[in-house]
Length: 394
Image (cartoon, rainbow, N blue to C red; front, side, top):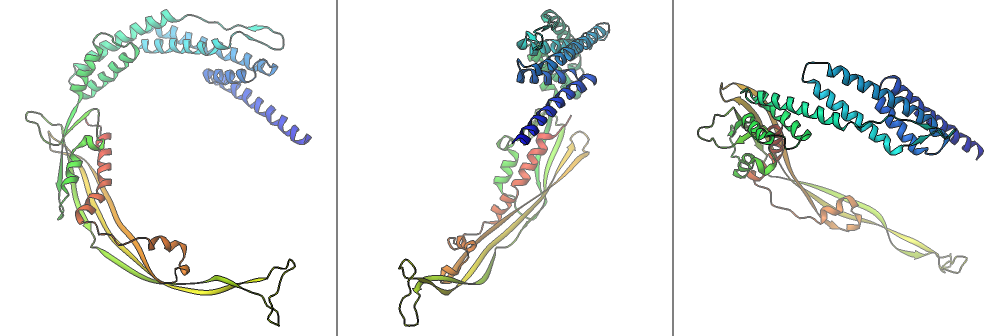
């Protein structure tokens, strides 16, 4: 027991030293905020104990260094003529404010060994944050409007992202939300989607309808508007063809296998008898029973109904203006219909448990070729959806 307590104390001392060392390492490498977070955790855990003193001192050191670094960064940024500086200044003031708000709930912090309070410099950054925000938003707004007028969809989408950032920083700023609608409209790519069949099989109408009803299976892309029928007067940027290149469906197959099952089982019992034919009893006067073993046998017929389908396709992405093929994605999926059932003759007690479920099943109708093709193409549909969702057309 004493040895266990010694090990426990040693473990916690090592753990404590490890935390302290890691905080010091973070301070040394300039990861002040990581050091602050770790120190705060330890101070809360060891509140009021002398062991917290070390972490209070480390918190003070990492906090002061972090504040000094951030203020120096702001000072350098303010001297820059580039208006992009306002992003740095705004973010840094937010960081200063958030950092001191982490520490405020812990104050006042006193060292347990002498009761001396450790002072943390706190400032009200509200005015600086508002000033930096106003400059930043004005700069971003101007930048977004210039990009919006460029006629380049890539730049227009960049303008949308900037406007979205403005709306996050300063909701309802000027006509930002109206400009976002305009940027989205101008930045959209239009794609015409078609299905082509290069096989000798008929593609189920239900499958075609589902593939071209993009909303029904969650195919959506913020910057691409997919159409399954051309709209007069609209200049499409891309044509996307889902081309079925091969469909194979096996014939209906019924396989049969005979299995002979034999097992020795207990079938009641007899009584042990002595040489005179009398029943032998145990020490309690009860007759001694002997299990009666018999061999049972069953003829099991296993039936397997089997049918398989494979669908192969590809997605072609074509520049609608030049007719040039830009990309080609091969797709393939399979579906297997496999139904097994069994019948038995003889004593069912001989049949292994793994076969019993099959005895409760009956033959079922084979699925049609059309149904097999539809089921096999489900993976094609989901992969096609992923391609549409992840496309980055301009």
